[in-house]
Image (cartoon, rainbow, N blue to C red; front, side, top):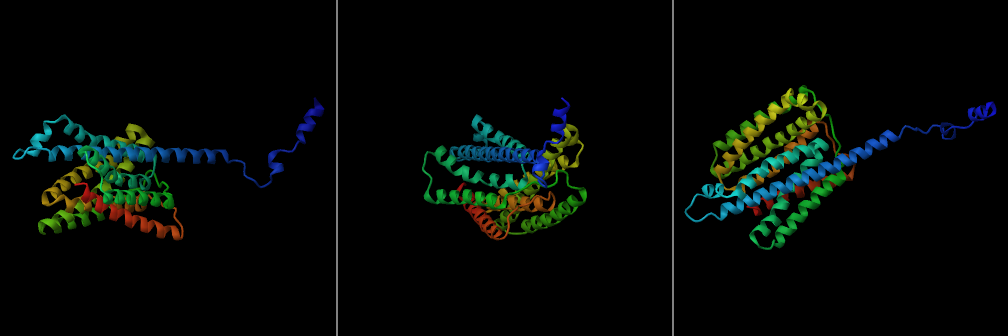
Amino acid sequence: MLTGLLIDAHRPTLPDLLPGVPLARAPAASTNVDRVQSDLLAVLFALASALTIAWGTVVRHGIAVSAPAGSSPMLTAIQKPMWWAGMSTAIIAYGLQVVALSFGPLLLVQPFLVMSLMFTLPLSAAYSKRRMSWAEIMWSTLLTAAVVVVLVLGRPIGGEDQPPIQRWIPALLIGMVVLSGIYQLGARSDKRRRALLQGLVTGAIFGYVSVLSKAVADNFNLGGFSGLFTAWELYALILAATVGTWVQQNAFNAGALRTSLPAMKIGEPIVAFTLGYAVLLERFQAVDWEWIGMGAALAVMVLSTVVLSRKSL
């Protein structure tokens, strides 16, 4: 037995055989796997949210345009159970968005939400029993490709779960001052410009809603219901969503949707991306020429969003 102990004592260990090689890699590998799984879940829930938004939009729009001549579209709509089902999708879609944000960074989730426009067109074609035009197919394909390029080249990573209030205050104050000014400028303009500017304000406010939703999801992940209800972000989120809905309705009333809706659709992701960088410290990991590719893809995404938002009406 003593001989065996002496042999074991002089048996070379793995560090002796591999000097200078760090061995504590299992936790890192496990962390990487967990992050990939979380990002995958974030993508799946974001796609589910986008698809839900698209389905609700198609149902509500289809019922509105099928209202008999001379009748009130709203009175006709509220008498149909499918209209109520379509309205409920807004809540379901937002819930799916929050779940997606609880799993992945805002910079990963937000591009997929833009794809609700891409889902709207084939669903609308199926609902109306018509074929999609080649232009619709082309722009939908471009939007999808642009989202993929942004995510593949950008490789977004998460930032801080609980940013300090000192970082929130400037972002919120600047947003309130700038957006209030744009809204007032629109209120003094003709109907077309009013719809455009108030649509832009609506999109920007919902960009803030997206960032606050990410903060609320992180608060719940870290502190449960206690962390959720004792943090100011939840109440700021409710206020922002309320104001955003009110401004959105004003934008709809100001003029044609073909003017206000594209502004809403491009305003939200731009503001969400900016705040994700500035407040949450989320980052894209693109390097060198990849930034050029990302810039081109973002430009295509904006252009496709404008075109598809007009075609979806």
